[in-house]
Amino acid sequence: MLIVDGVRKTFASATGRLVLDDVSFTLQRGDYVAVMGESGSGKSTLLNLIAGLDTPDSGRIEFDRIDIGTLSDDARTLMRRSQMGFVFQAFHLLPHLSVSRNIALPLALNGVERNLIRARVAELLDAIGLSSRATSLPSQLSGGEMQRVAVARALAHRPKLVLADEPTGNLDSDTAREVLELLRSQLKRDQAAGILVTHSEIAAATTDRVYRLQRGKIAPLS
Image (cartoon, one colour):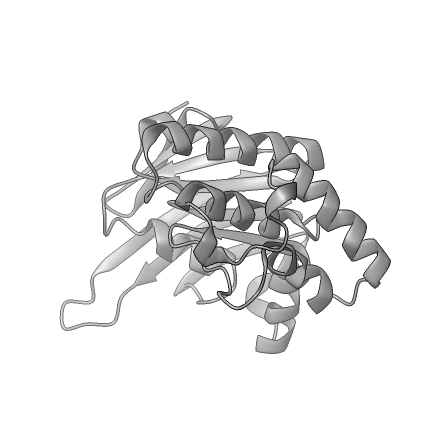
């Protein structure tokens, strides 16, 4: 479902720093992998390339049998909106929307009928244990609750691929564990592929396979 083949990326600067050097790996539907590495190792850059937010200097990224590099900007936007889900360290919930409406947003953007949106949102609220907070605003939630909502939003439209960038970086260890278990269980339930970028070995241990990104190279750890 995802093929990253010989990807190379250099940041434009006086030194032309090489960030990714011949990075290759594949993902099938249902695979859940972690990418570990120090700050500045290129983890977030790799996610941006896979999401089509940036382009590699060389190499190929193929998603669902389509070479992302051949797509127009509009086509990439549509691909992200319909086929991918994103979870961020900083949550990125819309502050003026309720929990329910935050979760419903990707469904609405994809033109899903209102009755189907209501049913899917109710299903996800139950799954994340926040049915009683459906009308609450993000400012009324704890950090762990906001991240659970962010996970639900990322999965609402049943994407084929979920990209999670340090999703537990702002959470205490117990809350992080709950969020990681939720993310894994929902990915497996929907048979979506997932890439978790993390510094945490504990977080990485919740995935099926772990890669380390170091000096631009990627290698499997397990």
